[in-house]
Image 1 (cartoon, rainbow over the protein chains, first blue to last red):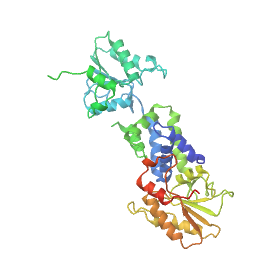
Image 2 (image 1 turned 135 degrees about the vertical axis):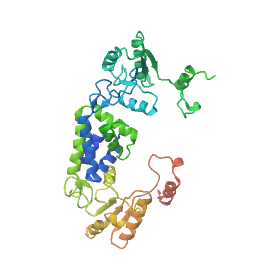
Image 3 (image 1 turned 90 degrees about the horizontal axis):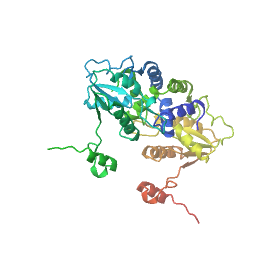
Image 4 (image 1 turned 120 degrees about the vertical axis):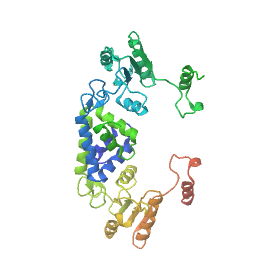
Length: 198
Length: 198
């Protein structure tokens, strides 16, 4: 235990996700021992981000404007909507350059244990957007875990009656992975989703 | 890549020690998505720490006053001085409750590769403190790695001619460790430093 403000700084850093007590101490001393502008620019950017960053009123992505860069880009395909749990997922999908449509951020996944049901997610906003007849396709890109799958199943049922193509990202062996070390669920999915190659 | 301030925040967080790009993104979104006071109290404590924390003018430990809590505590044994590389090491030693004397922070270790020689460390200050005849014992507690050992050897030679007991922390098998998995150097040291038990 340190005294006063040093311990306060360690405690505050230790509350960040993925930062344990040892890392918090290391970061705190890095900030204390480095030049004043290193710590100050971090403090400033946190305050600035908190003041400026809001959520796109269309898709829910992080944005500095009312509409995020993707929603306000006329070159994006307006007919496809990719539904993700989180803003971070948009970034991951954008890196693949496989998708040129629009996004919708749910803000999480259905998880009865965490008390998150469909009403806590941005599903109503999604339904409002889908009222636009221009949207022809919905790609469900929730995480391939229990909560993500539950959310995908819920959405698939909800959208089933609409005149929209609904698809879900493929599950299977990760590229560069080793069949021998794949877990049973993944290997099972890879079999289930096998594709003809001839 | 994100736009504007979000990416700035991720970049700034990614400069912290032990925080990679993925962690930086995770922390940034945690700060953006959580209540405003979470991010603000972090920003404030960084600014406050940077404004208030300085280094004890006697030992070099982090402190909010001119003299740190240990140096200004009259109950500490004034005859023993433990030399450490870093303020964090003081905390680690204090947790053992094995030492009741004073400390001296070198501010690093001798490392020709990093361009750190004896003049870059607080060795002159140490010599000044040792001019006080009250100090009878110096315990060198540098890290048991190449740089720390070099520093310990340098200090041992420097202090060799003085009328002071100089010792170094023991190297050997870590408690709770497994002999089978100990590295050769550590096991070698454990043999070299073996102690009679009968």
